[in-house]
Image 1 (cartoon, one colour):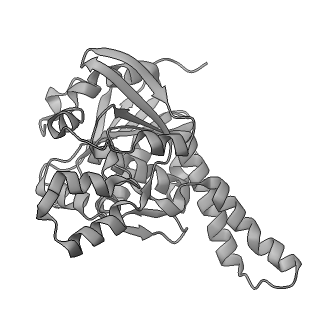
Image 2 (tube, rainbow, N blue to C red; image 1 turned 30 degrees about the horizontal axis):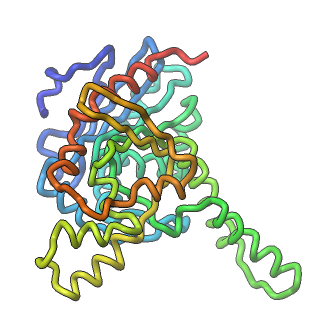
Length: 311
């Protein structure tokens, strides 16, 4: 809703928000603070406008200078508002002492939250904020995958980073300091993302499964004969290029008000396995499982946890 006065705030105060009209490319967002619990939060809205939907569809991954691959469309739109959000956060925390910074959103908004968390790790302009908060967490609900396969394993990144050193010991390497620095930044940022991103996925939710290694089969199920052979090849080459990064929690329910249990994936490999689309997809249920109603109880539980004072 653009009428922010109608939001149920639960003790949070709105400090800033995106313009009602916007630029036509930036996502909707709001910065909130909870002084009693020493929390500042940035919340992104899910897909709502034609521009948002277009950004969702520009899924060809691109590599950042640090080596991490990202979803092109969402990274572009999030980047268009990043400077404004960063400035508003500086104002919001000016009278707070080491608050917790929470980045969150549902669907497209969750993807933006994860990308903003990445920039907080790799962008020097974020130091004015990171040095004044106690920690930065991203909590997402039904978010699409936004990081490329080449970014999926910190262990592999570490092995690649160590390889030039062993070659140099044998006299065979010619590696510049810049490359090693980029590899080190990538490894550090990936480790931070794995530690600080909590990604909730409701059982059959189709959106987090649209860009995984096995998702080309899902696209063919969704689109069927509408895909020409050339389009089929292109889809397969790009949609399978993404991987889960962060701590993935899978919510299993029989109704919106009845959470049976939450399964926490042990690692990226298990998360990737649990994100594999079913061989047969009942589309209405898969789309229904993406709705905010089915995440609402978990949202309430997460909010309650955030409002619990840290020991």
